[in-house]
Length: 148
Image (tube, rainbow, N blue to C red; front, top):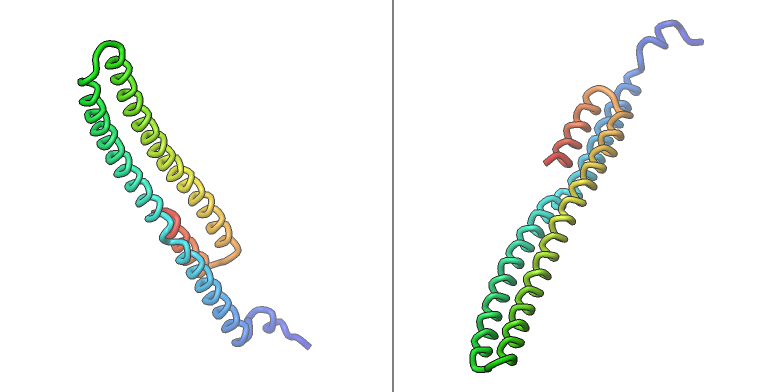
């Protein structure tokens, strides 16, 4: 038969079980959060690489235009006009393609940021099922992981 005190104080085994479960949950959450850490670095590296590629493509397009334009100088009349227009069109096309690639890299980085915000909300919601110190640790780990 149970006494009134049985319901007020948990047994020593229950306290250790609760502590063990809390520690285990914190470890699992920590490992989950650490598995996706390089994602932010990757997106910013991709954006920097896209910027460098854009600059390189623009320089190459301008150099190609100058070379084509020099060839056009040996021509005369309408042939020269057509040659110059073709050289300018090739330069414009290369620069436009480079701009599109750079813009896509920025859009991809923005989409990644939106996804990380959504992941943060999920991680924070997972913390809601915890209490006390375990919940505080969980929230801090989620913020550290997703709010860089």
